[in-house]
Image 1 (cartoon, rainbow, N blue to C red):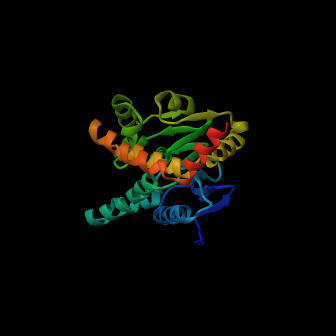
Image 2 (image 1 turned 180 degrees about the vertical axis):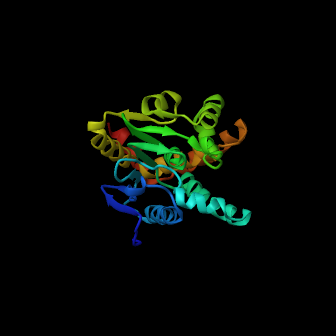
Image 3 (image 1 turned 60 degrees about the vertical axis):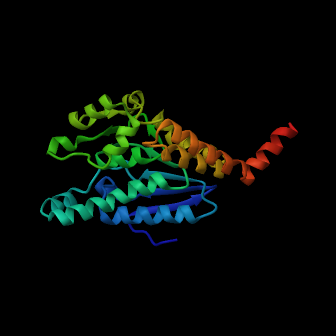
Length: 254
């Protein structure tokens, strides 16, 4: 396993936990932390014991977005440098989408701008009651450009438009109502509920969960007929897995 400086990584009972570890900076994203997250995701994908990836934040917040010092520096950069910097971040979102394991974001405190995008890029978002979400980039003349592709797939068009142009920060319950997140748990039960949820997900068939994630996201932009045909192929592949064969045998024995 790689030596990490800005994140903490631990694997227990099938769950690979990646914790953003810059609490003094509200876990703001810079090139180093993004690079280390990519490496941690590669480690999790290669680890046969890993069945779920859980992303959390140290300290009071999940992630406040881009590091302001890095953002100021990038505002002085050339177009070529800005493109390279943006692609470095975009690769993380694509890697999360294509990752063979389900990725769960455990959000407490604030998940703002790129931090909100990071949470939304996960397959499942669990939030503490006091958590807050938002894309306030418009308030400083910026836009949530890359994460817009993720947000547009999570919310209705009008909800997404309102969030990115209004720049408002919303509470967890409202984010749940919008469909931005999956579950909200009381603050005093949050950690236990997150661990329980991740544990239940890790107990599912790894091959079935992985194939389901692959097919669901592969359908983006497909016609109905093409999506059905893709389902035909994955259906056949799923039947051939050891998990499926074992599951059918156990079911028939009942």
